[in-house]
Image (cartoon, rainbow, N blue to C red; front, side, top):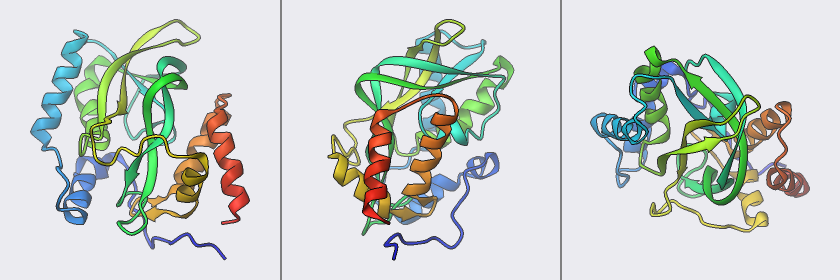
Amino acid sequence: MSEVPTVAEPTAITRESLKSGVLQRMIAVGDPTAEVLSFEALAESRRATLAAEQAAGGDVWVFAYGSLIWNPAFHFVERRTGLIHGWHRRFCLWTALGRGTPDRPGLVLGLDRGGTCRGVVFRIAAAAVEEELDLIWRREMVTASYTPRWVTAATPEGPVRAIAFTINRTQPRYAGRLSEEETARVLARACGQLGSCQEYFRSTHDHLLALGIRDHGLEALRRRIAALGL
């Protein structure tokens, strides 16, 4: 019998729910100790990120490595596969609400230091940058668990500069380098208001495979999870 708890109606991440501030409310109510960034703070973070590359007024690329690949919830005009250096995909962020509970926290992906990562880059048209980046910031930067930064992504059509959300190691929810076995056990069992860790993991892995992207770390985790029989 599965030990994975169920959520009657998981909250869906959509354009409408992001605009309504659903994640901000969820965390503010579920964890009063969390420092939820104001929408004004999010706007300042966006402006500072764009200014760092003098990208204001032009198209903007965003690098996706997890759920943004299979549920971007923002409008884009082009999508490519891309490879970045200096960062790798890892389940390194604890979540006690979205994909877990305070008693059984889950894990979600971040870009941690070192190695390489294959993912997807999305191009947002200049005219839509303000609205679409607002949605992305509301999703990724609720509690500053990530640090937005510019990376160079190698694509089949040439390199592009893109915004990537890397893990903020100073955050208390940073999980560090958990063992493969511990990570698999968490992913196999945790579930929260956004759904289960297994669903999050499988959607990410399946979509990467559909794009022709192999991630040996995720493949090993999938075998571990299957061996648990949950």
